[in-house]
Length: 352
Image (cartoon, rainbow, N blue to C red; front, side, top):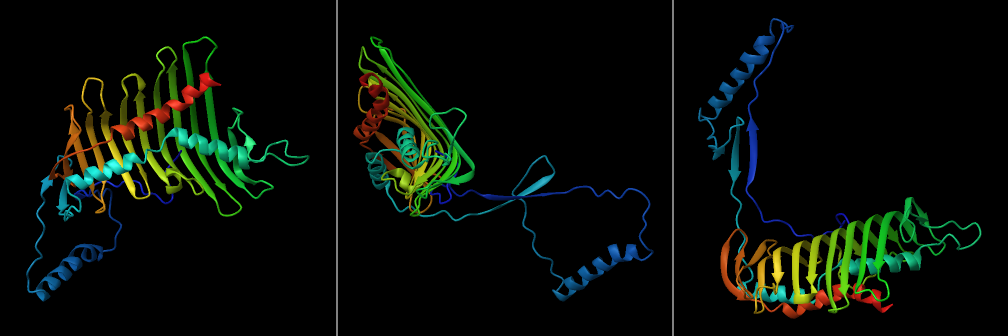
């Protein structure tokens, strides 16, 4: 996945105070002046006379100068402007229900991106053996496999255009009788694929997935990350809506714990997970710890701070700290479903 989208719905930070820094620097006029005899008058007397004339015309009342509100030891002065805070549209319960609805639909993952990348490359690329005199489009990358490049762009006979490059490296590890099966892949991309009917696959960034299946206990641990942006106009999932951000998910299958960190956005949704743990191993009851930031319709952030207690309730605040009260969420089933999806590549290795 990849760099920043052209049409990004990525999350925007809360409005902050704006500052302007003014610095005084000493004037340095070294050497003998070569200006004409009237130069001093033009530089000093004439501007001063004009200022006095303007002051007289204005009633000799100088403009009020804004006093600095803060200063630092660099010789500069900072002025601050007040920004009007928005009013919250949601209450605490609505913010919690919105988070539940988003997580019920799942989260984008490197697994999903890998499927789209392979399907596109296999279905629409033009292989080197397409026919006599027909060049490969795109050409095979240095690492072989599905790594490819088309730095100057190329067109297939079916009307697909590839431009850019992709480095894709998959790896599996399993031997008959072994107690472990592993699957991992990594990809770095910066490309655009255009279809004959206006289809577009824009991608820039990186993604990866690593999972280990312990066959003895039949449990899986998986780490999945996406970073950058990607939009696939013919996709039927999040990637049709221009996914962007950096999101890490770690699934610990033995105790069914999910850790989420980072931010991700797609059309109409922007989330930031701050050290979130769902059902941490030390809690006996369903629990969520950490904080989730959710962009609201005001284009400002709601923060659900779950703290460290072994429960699923959060203190909800808006914008820069407006308290909205407490709300509890029910996200265990949704998060576990996402974790079980992350297990699938590793489970498939031993089943082949």
